[in-house]
Image (tube, rainbow, N blue to C red; front, side, top):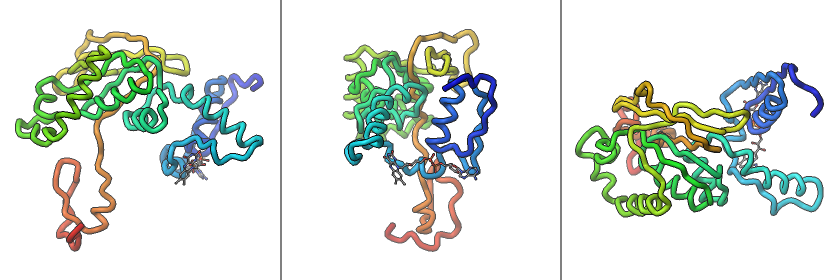
Length: 251
Ligand SMILES: Cc1cc2nc3c(=O)[nH]c(=O)nc-3n(C[C@H](O)[C@H](O)[C@H](O)COP(=O)(O)OP(=O)(O)OC[C@H]3O[C@@H](n4cnc5c(N)ncnc54)[C@H](O)[C@@H]3O)c2cc1C
């Protein structure tokens, strides 16, 4: 790309194509504004399976582009990713999002994600659980009755903990990442200690070199289908219960 520094660019569409163009333009020095009539990746991109498919391309420019995309894929990904994306890439494609990763957030899902990253070849520097050890011991719940829900997965959790221990990955409670820094890519992260209400303890910040950050805070239920079927909903993630349920029998 020629000299573009100082050029102001408007990109229409925050799908994968618009976002990729915006990123390259910003890295080349342009001031970029992305405009979308919906949300980021709200259209076709959110339905994609996330593969870079090479096998269905005939010899020619399309195949060469697909092969180039496949080579660039890990490099482009090495940044800040959600735990779900890191897990899908590590388990599904054996792609390690980064070489030196920090995994941060809350909930048991951080453990299988860290284990998958190790299997895919990443060095996991530390896993930071925002909750206190007491909350984790109660099955990530403030209520004492909750661990029963996790007892069925105790063996699985123990396996992940063993993997982390074998690879000497520290698992720290009450700490999280508050900033990712770098020129165009993640170069270091700032971690900090948290109080039980997750407010940051001033002066507890630590800078740690890393080339990728994986963040996850559990799952949100997708309730479109049960709501459409007229099911009554209970539980913390369920929102207001529709009154009175008109269907849902046998759902
Ligand atoms: C089920 C499914 C699976 C797929 N799996 C794969 C796969 O595994 N690998 C692969 O390579 N490809 C896959 N694809 C194809 C891939 O998803 C698309 O080629 C790609 O997402 C297109 O990206 P895009 O940015 O061009 O479009 P989009 O993601 O559709 O983004 C366009 C954006 O522009 C916005 N927009 C449109 N008009 C305007 C306007 N006038 N003003 C403001 N904003 C506007 C829209 O809101 C939208 O956010 C799959 C597609 C589907 C449907």
